[in-house]
Structures are given as C-alpha cells and as structure tokens.
Amino acid sequence: MPKRCDLCPRYCKVDRLAGEMGFCRAGALPEVSLVDLHHWEEPSISRSRGSGAVFFSRCNLRCVFCQNHEISQGGRGQKVSSEGLARSFLLLQERGAHNVNLVSPTHYSNRVASAIKMARDMGLVIPVVYNCNGYESLEALGYLDGLVDVYLPDLKYHSDVLALRYSSAPSYFAHATKAISEMSRQVGVPKFDHEGAIVSGLVVRHLVLPGCSHDSLEILKWFASHLPKGTYLSLMSQYYPAHKARAFPELARRLTQREYDEVLQAMSGLGIEDGYVQRLSSASSAYTPNFPHSNESVL
Image 1 (cartoon, rainbow, N blue to C red):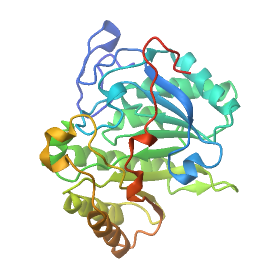
Image 2: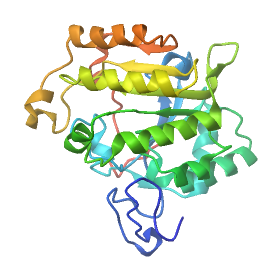
Image 3: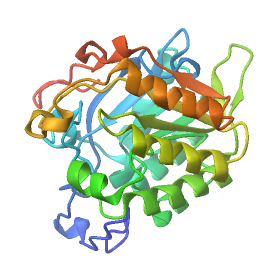
Image 4: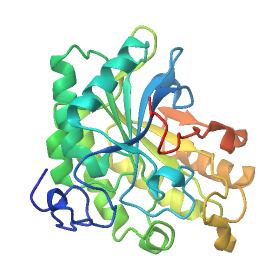
C-alpha cells in the first residue's frame, strides 16, 4: 500500500494504513462481496463453465445508475488479506472457471497485484481479468503490468459534463483514455484458446445511455482512431434505471432500439469489426448477482 493513496485519478493521498479514508471509503484491506462462477459476461469470458468472479466492495465512482450499488456504494462485503484473495482465486480455478474475473478492483489494485503473485506461486494458471470502470491511475496499472492477462475496462463518457453529473468523475475521458492506452500496451489485442475463451488482450466496454447516443459516437471515434485494429469493443444496451437514476428525468427510462441502432451503425461505419453487441432484452436485473449480507459468507 502506498503511504499516500494514488490508486485512482482522484489522488486523495490519504494514508489508508492509518485509517484515513478517501472518496471510495475503502480501508487498507480489500473488501469482497461475492466469489462465484458468473455466466453473464461477454461470451469469450464466460464460455461454458463460467467466469470466476470476485466482486469487490466500494468504488472510486458514484454512478447514479449503478446496478451493483449495494456493494459499490453501500459497502457490503468482508475484509480479506492478500493471501485470502489468492486462495479464493485458486478455489475458482478448482471449480472450473475459465478465468479469475476481478470486478471493480481499482481501489485495491496494489493488494490485488500481491494476491495474483501469490496465487501464481500456489498454482494459478487460468487467465486473470481486470474488470474495471476505466477511471484508473497509471500508478495503479504499474502494479499490474505483467500480472493481468485481460483488461476489461469501461469507457463510460466522452463528455465531462455527463461524467460529473452521473458519476462524480472529473476529467473522466482524459484519465480513462490514458489508462486504456496503457492497458493496450501491456496486453495487446485479444487472443483466444481452442475453445474460444479469451486468454489475453484488451476488451473495452461501453454502455449506451438513454439520450446520450451523441456521446457514444464520440467514444467510438476515439476507439477507432487510437486503439490497434483487432481490439474488441463490447457495445452494451443493458441499461435500466437502477439506484438513483429516476431522480434524473433523462435517465428514468430504458434505451430505445432506435438509439442503440444509431450507435451500432456508427460502429460499423467506423470499421470496428471485432467485439460484442447485445439485445435490448439484456436490460434486466435478472443478470445482476444476489450479493450476500455482511454476516453471510462471500464464498
């Protein structure tokens, strides 16, 4: 743990070892809310046996529409050491997971790096997926260089106005694109095994929000012009008004097919050929995990 926290672009510089808390409200030890096989990720990540998801509590964003707000903002979870994390990775491997899928790990990235090293020494051989919101510091990514096999970041916003309004994230696009460029440098374009499961590479997610297709088009333009050909884009339509979204009139509805089709057409027009798209029926809480209460085991 750095003496003064620099694990995300907020650079709160708090001393978490001394009990100080920054924006994310995370302590020195990681908090985990669920460790389980997850079958609702991109096809190459979940495949037939599922992705070994480790859901971390707390977050360095405050998305008003967060579908996992119980853990990201409610803080539901249990503290675990780096060794405990490593053992959970091995347990997922024993259960047949195609990969270890670290969900929202940014604010614990240094501890996660230690856990990956321990797990590799203890026999972990499946790929490690770093599944994050994109609001990463280059310092945090430095801990992970050579340890993460697959980066799965969001690229949420082009507009700083939207990023501040919906996620309280200053300069989101500038920080996220720097981070994603570094992720691309580290792992390159996706590679797959004989079963079609991803083993390495970068997959960028973008969730299309209602009324924000213009912002999505700018995201796609950056993706097409700044990332290597063959980088995968996961264009998601799974938005539904969760958490505090109904307090924002423009977000108090689901995405329309016309809005999503507009972004799909732009994706094709920009020559983005590799990736994943969704049906609007994916916009359902049925795909959100049931997280244990704090007095229940996360395993």
